[in-house]
Length: 223
Image (cartoon, rainbow, N blue to C red; front, side, top):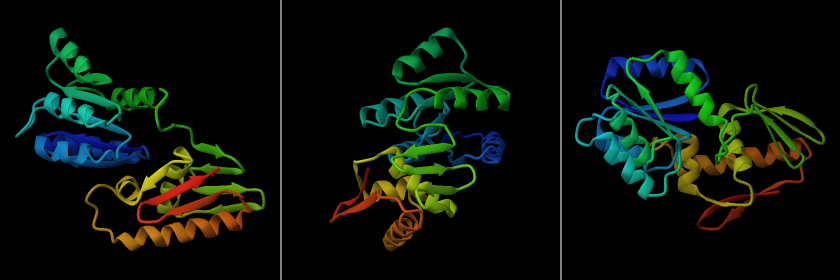
């Protein structure tokens, strides 16, 4: 999962970053409300960890704005404000869960796992099956009618997003944001190169599924 953490306590955010990374997640961290709103609006994340008290803009304002913008990623409010009214306000504003500081890292990981089990636009299982393909996101292998190949991490991330969103036109900007991360210093041509790599992988495993180019827009994965 790609996770955004918006937290002004740099020591805490570093500890959470290390723990989440060790558990296989990709994590982006920012420390101000303005930056948090900017990154969250990219709609590039599977989960958002959001502090309530932040410089420039509070967490509830960020939450309200991203929900208004159509961002549906699960949000866990992580805060020292533990009153019943505080929790109700957070959940009513659009949060999916509420975690009070200080917290055990095991509890945070468990809450993320619990959210991943809900019906969302993403799934938590390691083996993703679509049509004649099976993508194992743990060991980065793609299996088709004619055999199996090993993918690079970036290839697997890109193919995973296609497989989770079949038959949808995916704009280039969205693919770059989801796979490389918001504001990542990546050239637009890198996406075309990885599409070429994936098409070659699909042929190698004998799949009949195709990645279609939608001119001037992006790509679509056809089942």
